[in-house]
Amino acid sequence: MTIAIRDERPAARPAGASHLTRAQVDELGRELDAIRAEVMDSLGAADAAYIKRVIQMQRMLEVGGRALLLGARRPAAFVVGTGMLALSKVLENMEIGHNVIHGQWDWMRDPDIHSTTWEWDFVAPAKGWKHTHNDVHHTWTNVVGKDRDVGYSVLRVSRDQPWEPRFLANVPMNALIAPFFEWAIAIYDLEIDEVKAGRKPKKALVDDLKAVGVKFARMIGKDYAGTPGLAHMATRSGLQAMAGTFLANTIRNIWAHTVIFCGHFPDEVESFTEEAIEGETRGDWYVRQMLGSANLSGGRLFHIMAGNLSHQIEHHLFPDMPSNRYAQVAPKVKEICERYGLKYTSGPLHRQIAQTWRTIARLSLPDRLAVAR
Image (cartoon, rainbow, N blue to C red):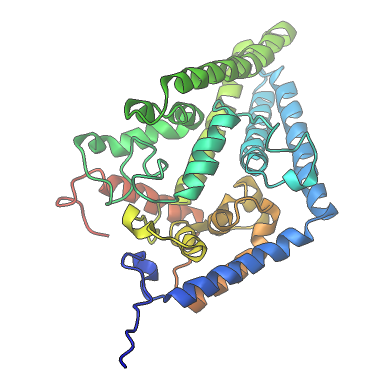
């Protein structure tokens, strides 16, 4: 009797993993599950102390920065106050807000450091961001047509996105988004394109607009009325304090935009078609996260200021793992990639920035005119 041998490879596995068999992908998934379980079972007091120290440091920087801006007519107070406030905003958004909202610290059962109660220092409300980022982006990472973060509805960042004339503005549009990133994300999270397509009810859009309006009022009140108002009454430094606060927000926005874009758009990072994820198993999902993300190399302080999104690959594999543990698991993930013949994309910030902007520039042109990578 002749026994038919079943092809173990799915019809449309991602290019970077096309050499793997079903058994290998399943085993890879089990190995990554074991890494996650080992870390999550060992979480304890040292981890809790870490995030509490970071929050304490962020609040000290914010109070100190705003206090110095009360005397912002003095150049030294303006420069140091703006710098401290910018650092506090970077820490709050990247290492604290992003990761708390992901649920990385929910295991502590601390109601003040929990994904259900934390509202970050960002115009985009946490509730809307949890849907577009945690639910949509992390589930459908780099799947064109499913992951709306592929181009954020306005940019072309993959050849799998059909070219349109509007993408000729890819570079200036991205340059405009960077300093106003929090506003761009707030608008993006409204999912206006989903409403136009009939996939999101208009009532939900109205509710989201109300939430953005409330958050907007709070942010304006704190940043552009509260601190400048006190500065005006104390030292007539209101305009300088307002300028310092605007500059601190701009620095934070550019930094967040840079780190996030370097996580998915440098060379070697793959995007995927919807066909490639048909019948996707847990192991296949892990493979897609590794091929669709890129890390940034650097020291411990750099990783903290990047919210440990410099370990973007590990974050996408284990989005609910506390960020202070990504450096611990990164060597194990890299070893797995090497052993299974998968790319583990990583590089210094300056190189990843250059590659990201080059990709955005090249894809602004029709494919027949673009210079090949």
